[in-house]
Image 1 (cartoon, rainbow, N blue to C red):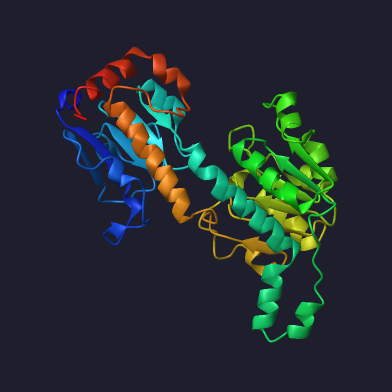
Image 2 (image 1 turned 90 degrees about the vertical axis):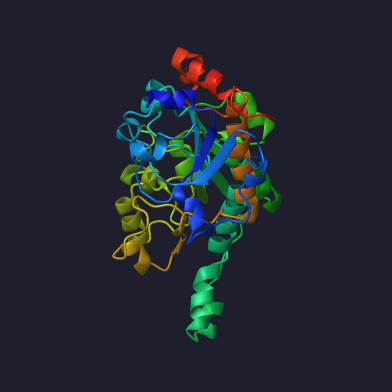
Length: 353
């Protein structure tokens, strides 16, 4: 394995799920940035595995990854790999501690995600407000008159609250502000008071967001602290006319508890792009509920999303090829580790131009 460190070729590998039946699954993922560079080769892994095996990772300097998980076992014996570029903003499928211990930087692509995800959240807020999916189903079933009796509501003059106030939440509330809500609340203990003020958003406790909002938007990362952050107690705080919108990560919300309140009608409904188990199991009770919108953790997947995320990932790979740390590294401690710096220096000798 050690001989990889002296390889004259800089190798970039893409996870197999960027391909579909031998062709690119997405029109543009920034590959033009990597093409025709002397000393650099790129390829797509031939096999998809939900969890990487060491043999998949060991031959590359940078791996650009979509869905597969990186565990400590994935990295056993992997000495060459310098960086993993996550295509997206979440990194809960990567063992950051194991990567740091192996001198591997993990970087993400936040700028590429913000607008498409914010638009997706606005879409869900409006769709569930106006009962779009319910009306569509009724019309298809020949129940035209019944569909006209389902009155919707508007975000105008209502309270919108977000759990988490990062870049996606800020852009979402900026867009939703055009619809004239009465108030916008945000719970985020890591954000300074002046940041809330700059965006015209009121800082609030988690309980206040849940109990006062007509729309509760889940916009925080999945961490050990946020797993089941919204459970039975929290759901019980929500108003009967309130909607829950989760586009972040499924396990932040206790799904069984959510099903209970939706079945009981103690909240008005939910719009979910993420679930505790994905794909959503065929026997999920969520399928039986007509006050829920379900999408496949892909609502924000647009041409622009993959173009922008791909370019950011490829720019990160090129930075490593120049012997520089990529932008948006999430395991910042790795940047000062001697082993990582040695790998970075070695990478910087391989690519011309």
